[in-house]
Length: 156
Image (cartoon, rainbow, N blue to C red; front, side, top):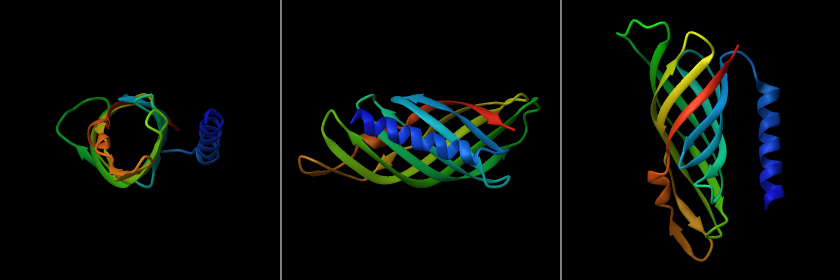
């Protein structure tokens, strides 16, 4: 299983390195686990957000969302504030309970882009759907383990 996780992370990293260009960001999310995060801008108001990580350190998971970005005006700072919302899909494998889950991912959050290439964010990305293994059940854990603090380096 460790070889599978390593191969998946290596392939994902290669994909990101091949597509890295301006208006992208790379970093991590820390919440109920640790995730590698990649943002790819599709214009001023849209982007793709891809993450691979260790949810709760008891498995491996990945999620991708298409996000709409909305500027927050009113604060006169050197950087910029945005809020964002999106929808996508996610999947994972929990080796502690030995089950596989798939589901719909949502996202809502707020971010601050500094005047230097750093971005901080706080968001909630639940992944809800069925889980298989030892019987089929609904993955309710995806509702409350998706809150995370993100730190990303903006590629220019």
